[in-house]
Amino acid sequence: MLRVANFPRRRSASDVPIVILLAPLFLGFEVWQLVLSERYMGIKQIKVNADPRTLPMANWIAAAWAGSLLVYGLWMFSLLLHPVGRAQGIVLIVITVLGYAMRSACGLKWVLVVLTFEGSIRVGMLVSLLAVTWRRM
Image (tube, rainbow, N blue to C red; front, side, top):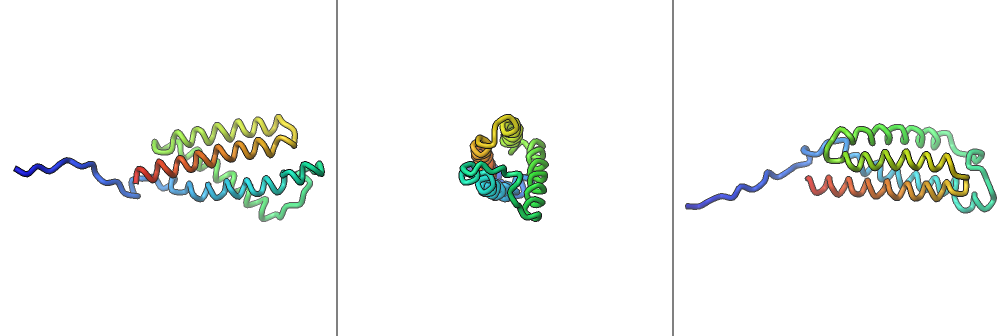
């Protein structure tokens, strides 16, 4: 008698919450944020002892940056609603809160170091989220 093995059901993209599929967008945002922070608080600015709050920034860049940060924060909290990205969402939120606390406590010369370290951990968590999502598809 021929016996058919019970193979697990193949997963599809519809099994993954749509909110997790936005991770590549926020990965791009993280890279953009690292580039902007280097531009406004980078080594050149530290050498001339410039205050980044006094440097000129186009209004559309400031508005896009602030709006993206708000959307990014909402997205991080929405990850807590899904079991697939919950661990990464928790780490993203904790790193953001700890990074903000450290940036507000240190001098301007250390802000770039904290931002770079914070950004690299967030990029790692986003890559981890993408890898977990890819394996579930």
